[in-house]
Length: 280
Image (cartoon, rainbow, N blue to C red; front, side, top):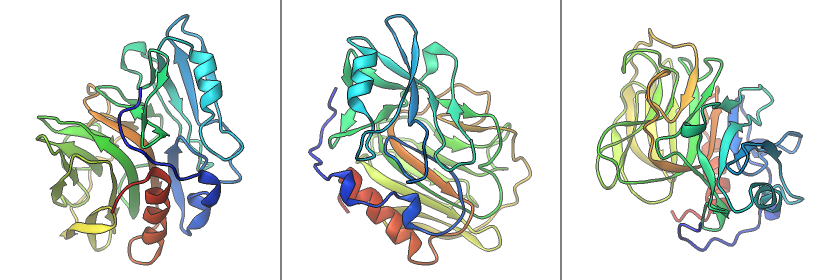
């Protein structure tokens, strides 16, 4: 199922994203290889025909092995059971509940946008077994295409209870969904297009939000994080709550070192923009 778009950039012309920048990577999830040293798979997929699961890796260019994916899934649907963390920290996101697993193949067709595979988080989600997205210096960059939504939706969170006591990245309200962060309660902006959404928490100073390398909100005064949670969840505002995200997610990386105060964020976003044909 091709959503729309006409991207044509070949990944062999780009260095692996994480290798291209400095800083400490906390976790990174993508449908392309982000570290040359990474030897694992991109995703683990369950096919609807018989519920068999299989790891899907990368081709010789570091792109998702779409041939292996379509061959495995066949004419049915393919859902993500594990999105592997490529950072080397083993912070995989997973979901064993068949009805809420994110979708990558719909009726035999891989979901794509700008000729790149994507994952539908339409009320689907994944959970990590550790709390790594919490207080402290953070820089997060996500490539996504949001759908129209009417209420607040969770993109990434470490919360267990309460909405203001731990960091989160969220989508909220309207036909052009707002993108917001609880990194110090830092503002929001609205855009329904494919975008690179970046957020930074400088735990000692302030927070910021960017869209496609352009500052949208910040500096914002930081709050005090008292509820850091025990898990990290993608697709819900808090751990244990229903998945409510309505977006296509291509890639998400989190660093535990600040990136936006130097040229590193420019390198990250330029790499993502070129690969995914995001128009600045």
